[in-house]
Image (cartoon, rainbow, N blue to C red; front, top):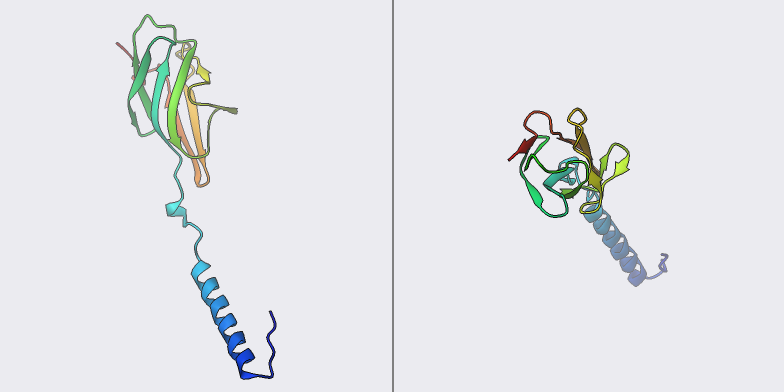
Length: 137
């Protein structure tokens, strides 16, 4: 923007414009979120459904998901319901959709490894029927 330079009004307007521009740039500088303020990837809640019953995770501690299900339940076709902070959730390369994607926990030697991805990074959670991750009622 160019103001007439021959009169004092033009000089004052030019000075005010430059000051306003500097103030706006100063206010906007550094507005990007520092790494500590970015949303960290996190699995917040988790449950499994067999179509009839829903089994809530008793806890998500560290990177382990603890869920109890009755022994007689078929673990090969469960629907996972979850909430998370982040952008996407994956098992391997397959994106998971809460309430839609089914999981198979029938193979006790193959834990499910959930990856929660956000702008700030990646967090990995393990769901397995090995050890105490999947508890039977």
